[in-house]
Amino acid sequence: MDRVRLPLLNDIYQERGFWKVRCWEDANDEPEFGGEQWREELCIGPALGPDRLTKKEAQRLAWESFLSRLRRDEMAGQNETAAQSKTAVQRETAAQSEMTIRRFVETAFVPEHVLVKRLAGRIYYQAILKHVLPPEEVDRIFRVTRNNSKAKLNAIPDWPYLGDLRIQDCGPEHVERLISTAYARGYSAQTVMHIRNVVSAIFSHAKKVQHYQRDNPAKAAVLPERPHRNPHLLTLTQAKQVLRAMRYPEKEMTLIAMLTSMNVAEICGLQWKYVNLTGSCSNMTGEPIPPITIAVRKRWYRGELDSVRRASARNLPIPELLLPMLIKLSGRGRWTGPDDFVLVSRVGTPINAVNIAARRLRTIGNELQMPWLTWHVFRRGRFALEAELSEQFYIQLASVFHSESPQGVQTHEM
Image (tube, rainbow, N blue to C red; front, side):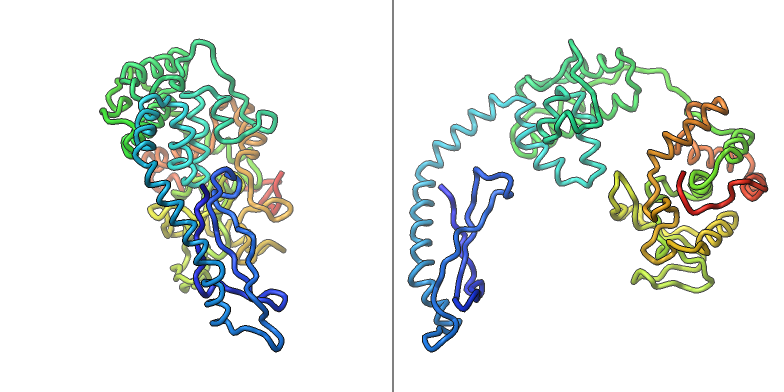
């Protein structure tokens, strides 16, 4: 039965000349309301006129006439529930022994572990779970309609999905079969590692909520050896070619990526209030930012601006090569307020790094016979070139970026 939660005495309020009170009640069959909803409001008595009640009188009358009765009803329901608790526990134990991995993911893992993550974490689990359960099942669990979903991954015949397996029956051999199949299909070592990590997270949560008592099968699973592929690294000549082919905003994004430790989400989420181009401390955000410094506090990811993790929050001195570019951008005609973004589209919105990569990086990479060109390549290339060239790296980069260019630094996105 529904459980009534009585209000505090000071929850009594006035509305249209009357004292009223409302109570919360659980609504287990109404998940769209988050499991709770308001009961119908109760009218206590007049708050205006010659017969008006004081708030204290209304509180006393509310308790004597309404709330004490609700309390008695609730206690009776609790007693009835207590009488059934032993049977319920026995049924739950039996249900747990028969629970499949699909059912556990849907009823416990996703709502209790995944949905409390930030957006990036939720997207990550939703994507990788499609290699553990059939993609259609994952879309249903996350309430994604196939018509509106951009991800068109379909179930693969003969793929060893774990969904129908009882959670108590799963062992390392099942995880190893899943991993081996992924390798055989040409999945990268990184993707296979993600699959194993997500399976491991499922069973770690199952142990936490006492649905699984044995050792985590994913941790015991052995990954087959795969030949290591060296990541693509930009040479100095390639870096010069790429920068000469670029324009706003990818040129500015590339320079920031190669001269700082910022990733592309942090670059796109950088606002002017976190950039101090002056010679004295700035306090625009409520915390002091040292002179000539970028404070990394926000990131723009999947259309949302959120805070970086505490461990990722840092102050970065602005490199000498980067300073003229930021000064020039700060002098444009608009989009220079504290909450505006350093790199903006024509309408002042943050740059969409995915669109820029698809429309500009891919084109430039194909033209220069570098189809592997991505934002990550620039960050990796920075460390390799800096280690190889030392100070010459910055000199060579400056000669390219500040050379005469027909595009220059603009204030709009392609």
